[in-house]
Length: 237
Image 1 (tube, one colour):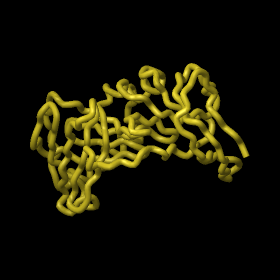
Image 2 (cartoon, rainbow, N blue to C red):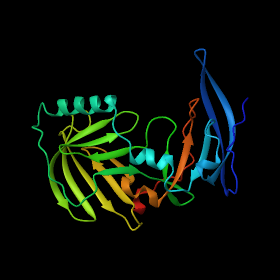
Image 3 (tube, rainbow, N blue to C red):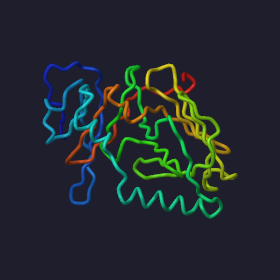
Image 4 (cartoon, rainbow, N blue to C red):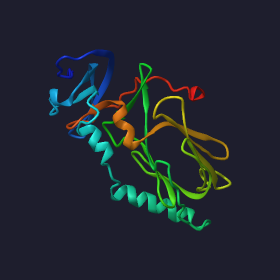
C-alpha cells in the first residue's frame, strides 16, 4: 500500500476522498489506495515530481497555460478527417461564417456548488471547437459533426444545424445550441440528435482564468480520475 498526499503550505482544506492509483508494473495493474485531502494551493508550492491532486487558485499557472495553448495532435486530426470523410459521403461540406461568438469551449464541473475547470490525469479537458466546416469535440478520442447552417446567432446564444453519421442520428441531422446561463461566463451546450441529447456546462477557453481549477497531476503513474464533483442538474440552467 502506498500513501500519496499533496505537499502544501498555507492551504484550506476542502474535501477528502479515497481514490485508487493504477500503475503498470511488469504488465500487471496495482490498485493503491490513497487518502487525499483536496486543498487550495499554488502549484509552485508543490512537489510536481509526485502525484498531486489539488485546487489551483492562481488562474495563470502552467496548468492554465497548458489548456489555453492546447492543440490537436496527429491522432486528433486523423479522427476529425475520418469522421468528416464519412459525413461527406452524403453531405457536401461547406464553411460557415460565424462572427461575434466564441469558437472554443471548455467543459466545467461543479465542486461544493462552485464552477471549476478540471485538469485530468489521462487525456485532455474536454473541449468543443466550432471550426470552419465542423463542430469538433476533443477528449480522449475526438468526435465530429459537420456544420450545415446557422439558425440563430446573438451575443448570448447560437444555434447551428449539423450533419452527422447515421449511428448517432438516423436522420443524419442534429442541432447544436450554446446559450448563456445566469452565471457569469457559464453556458449550456446541447446537441440534440433524433432520439437523444448531449448536454455540457461550458465556458469559452479564454475565460478559464475566471475559475479555479481542480488539478489531477500524475507524471509517473496513471491515477483514476477525480469523480467527486457535484451532480449536474441541467434543468437548473
